[in-house]
Length: 318
Image (cartoon, rainbow, N blue to C red; front, side, top):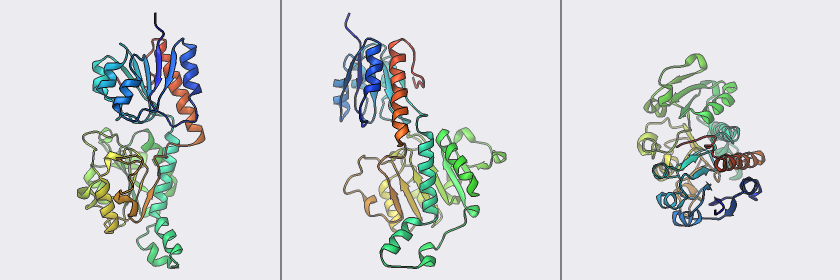
């Protein structure tokens, strides 16, 4: 009987020794690729029993190419690059790793939010331009105790950001259908997205990318925000209409933004975001710490072992 096949379709880690060891100890062959598109992914996973996918698109063609009853594991928190319906139709189990970087993303988000609310990017630019004007460069700053901090989505990462920001004295508002009723005894209130955009001084996005959230940060919602309000997105790039956000920043409609995720990654050279003021950009790095890489690869390796021994993924989607 032919040996089973484990494939990593794409990766940006220093090595794959952890995953390779998991495959080999279960008697499977191991292959690694740097697939750039869905066609290359389909070619890479042909006949595979297990596939681990990082950023590449796993589409219906890839699902058709895998062995019966195969398993796909997504390196990361989101899974919008996986065609879940196609995998389900082919009886392919899909798992992901939603808990490997909760602290890292929460700390990145909190740091960006605090920096924007204190207008540090603009102050830094003003000093570098030879200015020394605290009042004009800081106009619009509120003490944190007078700020309403909002969450669009309030899962594990959103709640971790909330816990980190509570000591600063913010008031909090949550827009998430799971939290439809007020939970003010926990330190936050709930609202619909309309109120969130109208009333909050800062909005942190922690929602999945789907038909309801795609493009939700756009001219329509940005136009309702306070002039000094800020938006932070370390969730999924497709939630923000980037041209609309750039226009709002350039016109001074909102006070600032921080983006760690983008519709196209790497960020294109002609993106309107590149010359937008009061904008912090990072290269999809909110998840990163030296510990997080090892944690992620170890959890994926465990799921490879589980798949090869007949068990479902630790965090199964379908």
